[in-house]
Length: 189
Image (cartoon, rainbow, N blue to C red; front, side):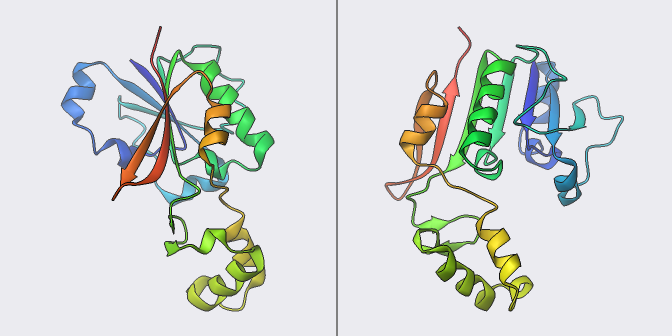
């Protein structure tokens, strides 16, 4: 089985039972932007489970249509940019495999997962920036850093996710009865 993991890491896949992945002859291609690749070392070059490539998940011309069996993306679409980039990302997901799994944090869950703060993502940019500059050591007094942190993720609501992945089954991941994350799952025909 050929899996394309957009924005994925080898560490994430270590959560799965490797002997099962190997028995199923799974091969995972990890795609990350070059400027974000420093957050984790790529898997060893001689690891047969993985291939690591650099690329833009919104535009992957190096792969033909249906080059993979499954596209997997966990908490990435909210980081690709504004709506046009999200549409391009969704198009690439649908183009590259007959099946996919895309997960993203839900805009209306009270905890913002990137800033790890309650309700802050519902505030104005100005109020968020003030909070970040007071509460994040990296941003002390740096308005530019705070604004980049705010604009590094655009959380989606259910209507947006359903529009982007209209051919999928949509599942809500819930915590204490509240929708925490949205999942779009398309099974092969």
